[in-house]
Image: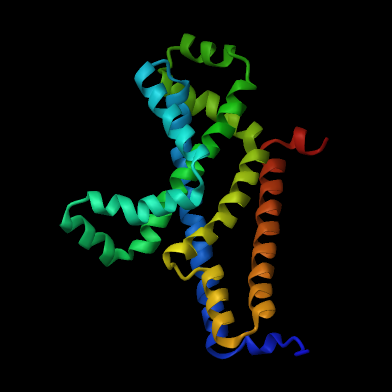
Length: 233
């Protein structure tokens, strides 16, 4: 039986591949998290509005992204959506790196749907008088949501948002299905060339493990800072 040799996959060009793959994974996660987080505020605001058409549109957005597998959503954006665009737009997307761009859009929209539901749960935990008092002071719906309701809901929603962040980070591995050279794709590439299956995927596993615990630690710190009364119970 051949002994384990991590040095065989952590040197030379294999190491360079792992570093590049890890960097691309982190960049994709950061870009998707930021876009998804910002968009979730828009989605939850539409869900809370009493404009029937906008509320229905936001509900449809959430239902689609929560009930269709993430890999299918990535395939739709990568293989389907570009075919509906003009040739000039397709050429521009290909010039910008279609794999990263389209996976970013797919995962960002997916994350926004889930995060918006976490925020909506936080809003539902607040007394209805918060919105009523803000409107009584002369604030518009948008001002009341931005200044009064959403900041409070965010504090309540931190734990589920951390869970969604972890899920999003792990979902970046779906990008390998369309050829984006993130850490999982690189691990498979190293394994194919070196025949060191365990070592290659063990490196990827360690990377995911370290990053996941880092996200959890940052979430705990954010919870302590924004909601110390709850975090100390």
